[in-house]
Length: 529
Image (tube, rainbow, N blue to C red; front, side, top):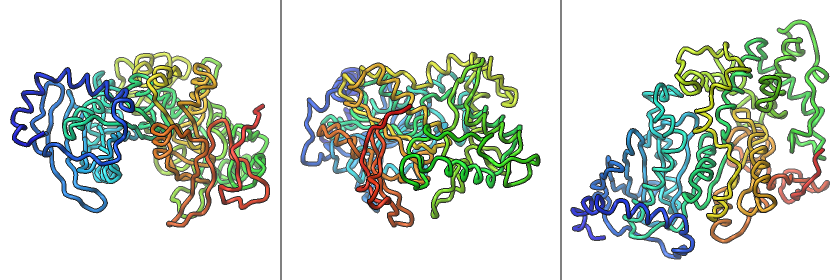
């Protein structure tokens, strides 16, 4: 595409918009068949600045800026635009393109500007690997509308946050990349954790041809019940506050009872479901709640509620927290316990409580109840008032047959010691997919449960591995991820490595090798009771 051609580009696009969008959408769905990955990097076929002329009915381009190489980031064209009504998107196109697009997800209630420092650093890392980098703020600005306040009396923003922003952004990014390089993408990938994990799952369920490969980290896939769970835990700890030092006592009792069940006393629970810890039986007891070494009846009751899960109308609505996250991670990490911040935050409210409260006030009910008091939440009646938000926000549909049939591949991972999001969501969802697609599920979807890992990383065990690289090998070369080697590195030094195994397999110690080396473990399937 010649630069002198750019003056007519906007007019041409207005005429051809529908045809171009359809073409790129189809190319994305079967890109592997239409365009095998080139061994040579693609170069731009036009200059960056004319992309600013591409304001069309579907979107508006705010800026198209050519950036020089800096640090590790190569020379690149940065495009920022808006999809009506308020979805801000960013597409960064490197001067040397590997033929792949990578869209990265959001955290929490999203709304981060593409201009935020951490966001710019992430896009620089993505383009440094040769990808086109794609991002969206999901339709609101977190500075102007923090947490869930953006959703107050705005169904449109709820829908944009739930799924529409990702869908429209990736379609627009494919279109811009095709125009800029004069060729369609060979492969399109998604990578995200937490809210980003939910977004990736939602794409696979609703729009199965948008991505060839999806990395889903610790997804808040059951968003609605997760916030109810946060309210449940917050109420339990309001009634009987428990200090962080006491959680350390709980950790000692849990690991004393369960650490060796997997054949190796290493400060990790390979599968916390095997642990039979009972607070009432296994904790030291006393009358005074202010004693840091023992537990009152009220404190034991609070722990039993947290481990037992949300009860509504006499049934468990949402599972309790697995054992094992109470412990303090190795030196070099900031958290004093996996419970710190998410469940217990001394001198301020926990993150679970804050996230649950903003959801209940601005998203859960119709009409919104911005003065709703979390302490008044009725676990028997209030969950039944959330059907609409469940229908657009939760990513629980286990039927991934359309994603499978489109040739998609997905890797999900979850830390067993995650206290932000319940790891049993990942296990239960994967088993739900297996109930639909049977033994062939592993041919397109694999789950990796990580012992001791906190939310999206960090924790007691290993937590650093290349999920995206494994996914690309699977999508592009057919090399299924039978075993991923992960590490725990602190201060640049690797302290241990261990294999991550596709669920339901676990890493089994050989009994004699170095317990800090992945070579001493094999992935095996063990019968569950």
